[in-house]
Amino acid sequence: MLRSDSLHMFDINGNLLGKTCVEDSNRPTCAVATECPEWQEEGVVAVSGHLNGEVRFWDLKYASRELSVLHTLQDSIHSSAVTALRVTGVERHDTVLIGDQTGKVSACKAGQMDALPPEELNKIIDELSSVMV
Image 1: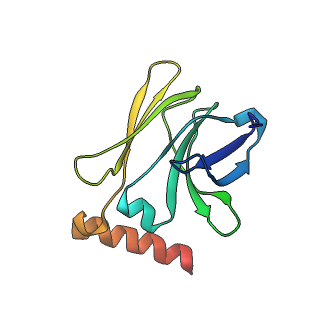
Image 2: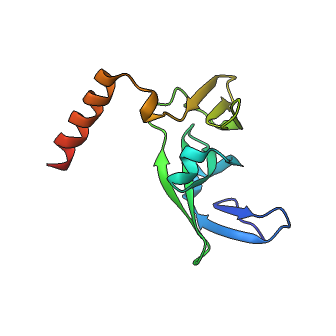
Image 3: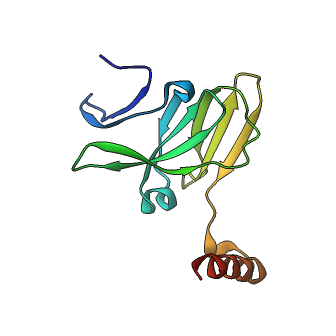
C-alpha cells in the first residue's frame, strides 16, 4: 500500500524503481519524470511539487532503489500546494511549468553554460571560487 508521506517511482510496466519517505507536513502533491539531457547528466529523473509550494528535483540510486533530493527550487513564487507540473521544451524538454492551487503558473528552465555571455560566466566563476575557498 502506498503512503501519502512517500514518493515512489515506477517504470512503464509498473515495476518499482525507487522510493523515499518525506515529511508528512510537506508531502508531494504531484510529480513528473523528466527527459532533459542537462538535468539527467546531473542525475535528475523526476520533479515533484509539494503542499507548501516547494519544487524538488530527484535523483534515483538504482542499486538501492532510493530517491534522493538533488535540488530544491529556491525563491519560488508558489506558497500554496503545487497542483500541476509539466516538463516541456521544443527539443530538449528543459522547462518545467509549475501551477499551484491559487492559479499561479511559473516556469523553471535549465540553463546552458555555453549559451551565457562571458560577463555572466565570469560572475558565476567568481561566486563559485569564493564558495570553494
